Image (cartoon, rainbow, N blue to C red; front, side, top):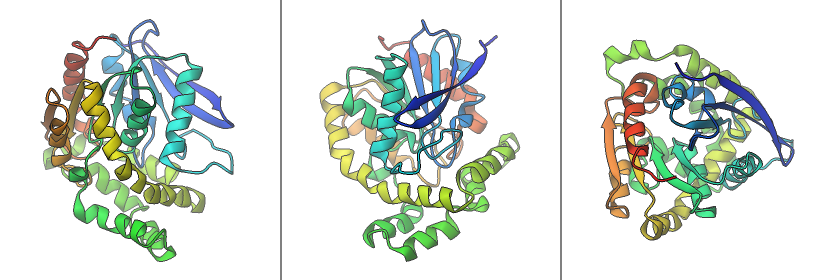
Amino acid sequence: MAPPKTNHFATIDDTSVHYFEIGNPSLPTLLLLHGFPSSSTQYRNFAPLLANKYHIIAPDLPGFGLTKTPSDYVFTFDNLAKTISGLLHLLNISKYAVYIFDYGAPVGLRLALESPNSVKAIISQNGNAYEEGLEPAFWAPIKKLWRTENSQEARDWLRNNYLTLAATEMQYTAGFPKEDLKLVDPSQWNLDFTQNQEGRGNQERQIDLFYDYRTNLSLYPKVHAYFREKHPPVLAIWGKGDPIFVPPGAEAFKKHLKNAQVQFVDAGHFALETKGCEIAEAVLKFLGGVSF
């Protein structure tokens, strides 16, 4: 039986960060970083599968879930990483493995660049670090936002097309085998929409992050240099039907990490919804070979 999951709030520079914790703190720590448009709830079923062997910390990133930011918080990936770094320091976590998914990737990779000796391993589940991973059709409207320097027209298009309940449902259902869709919990995309996207304030925060995502691409050369120089153990395990971050992004890890392990599961973006047990088995096997 998995140990109980507990919920906590920590104040980091006037931001109230919600996170859940599960597993004995004396065990090696695994940091789970969620993506857009979700929260730590995406790990609700996954974390207990790992908690007998690892101490799990799963925060809500600023702008998501139950984490509350001050009115002057600037929504950039640098600041998201700074907040999570502050949480780790507060919790006195100096070495850990990190599970990066979607937006969790630019946050987790910034943590690795900031403190490479702290990050003992990286599990990338549809967590991108290469331009090859960006699906052209999905990213075209976001790249237009970058190209037009955050124009109101581009912001409004994204507001009306990407920050909708239908678009959120798509992220949970596209690319999955039809017979597996019954395993996907509809309450998740409804929660993600109402909690993280509905209302003008939420929308502005999310579009600010769409715009700032361009800085992640600018950071890729530093990330690739980190891979070449530090050789972190990496498992890239991706849903092969993801309509946002496509399989070449997983294969690309091998360009700079010859020992990177790359696996695919028959699922879409939120692969844990249907392949959580399979991914947990792969993660446990992978981390079993990591020295903390």
